Image (cartoon, rainbow, N blue to C red; front, side, top):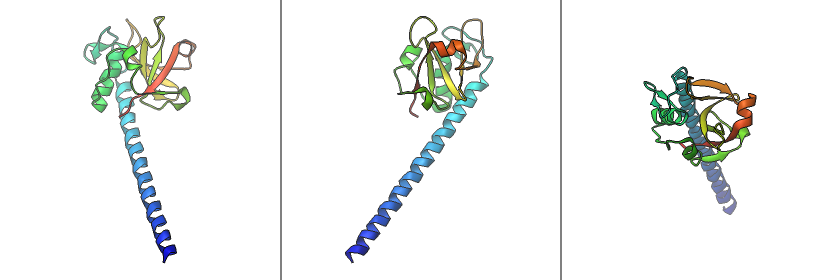
Length: 157
């Protein structure tokens, strides 16, 4: 009888563990879907003009205004306004851990975390580069971006 009870308890524990695993997998899939939607929306804003201090598709974006708008629009998350403040939220991740929707940071003005974009996969990111330009997709492996890369953060959703 004790042996049967032990087998039954082990079976129940295995079943609960499997259910938890399925739930975690479903959560991961749902989160992945939300981040894919975020990336699709971010890329859809390509060609929107850069505007210092801008945070709307109608008026234009600066880099942090663009990131904030995309996260607010797609995930209803209000993020800090500056790239430097954005560099302090979420979880620090290594380059090899990058997933679509992660924030990528660059030193473009002789100071760390002076620029931010959204990683979209396959070594690319979307961002609002500078005055006179428009939102666009860039390759992080291009020499300029690789040289100025500061790191990445993952925002919990």
